Length: 494
Image 1 (cartoon, rainbow, N blue to C red):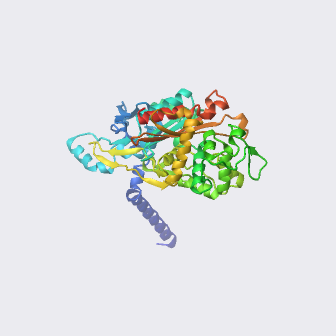
Image 2: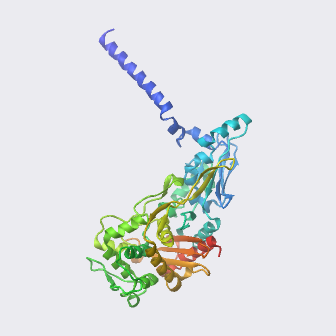
Image 3: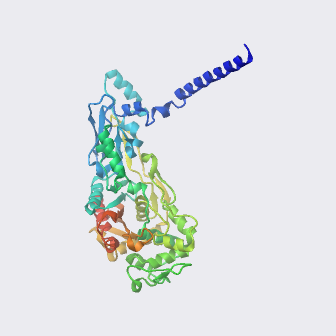
């Protein structure tokens, strides 16, 4: 064989060897990944070949399965109160795949989890169809309904998060406007068009506002500023007058910042009075004296600057809330009143409120209580887990004192409930450059405690973009406090 032919033969041999290596790699190394790939048609066929297991709220299924006429997609997903629960369940669509709980626990719900292998073998022998397992959530049905009704009655874009401070259980998770996952659960062109229309809709119904979108938290952040000032000794007596003048001269700036309550009330006010009337000057001054490092340190102990992880949402429960690095003195001062470049998810502000209500202990939020097999056996059960001791118990109790005073005598009175100890804080957050031309975001955070040990923490966020409303109606807890009250009543039974 001459040299050119020998080179060609060697080259062809190498190509054959490469093909054999690639084929073996796909069969043995990438097999699992390819078998579970969303774009693998067989994965979609298998997912919808039998009825899916259910997502459970309060002992009742909020999902189901319906038989179809399709050979490849024998069953499609159905939803009960789909729009109300969409931020919890996500969707299971033959065309669009899965999201949120439907995605994370797809193997359990579709019956393909490895833990079902023995049962599958038994079902094959007995001729029984494959059955999926169930996902038992921590959601309180009454609290979810109260939050959803409150926001939809307003016609607002918004979010509600309710947590059990002592365990971290998510009791309500609401986003409006929302969508019904069932309307695009199939494979038809019509359903695909519905999904596309939702993507393009102005109100962003597919957005998960409580978990995946961040906003300036406004004056609700003052509860964290107060905690930082107390924890670091900048403030030792919440009833003592401060040196913070009103209007407050922003450091290194000619700008002065006033307060809605007026200079007569806020000038050199105590921190308790400043919380009661939401005086900006006291919290601007506290943040300025603390400095960016101590403010950021405290914020991070409450969960800022880290993604909130939980297995049930593909490890990511809520996106990162940001206390930004490298702030100058004016920027640091502005964070004291929840403005500047500070951003937060509603989940994060619920976590801050819950930790303060829980004497400074921040618990890991979780939304799945238990996974059950088709035979109702327990596959997994979540247990409460502490994230951090954000501040000392003494500091937390002083902030509780101020928040409860704010509820009794200040701007959070609309959240009061007979027979329940309530603490609250209102908030408005400016947006845009020409803030006078923009209606601000509305916030309200609160907690409720009963003598029997039950408690709940709530964060309400309202984006009034689609509402015909004045700036004055956003402030003072007029919109958010009644929603928080109804959610607390739903949880605590009053």
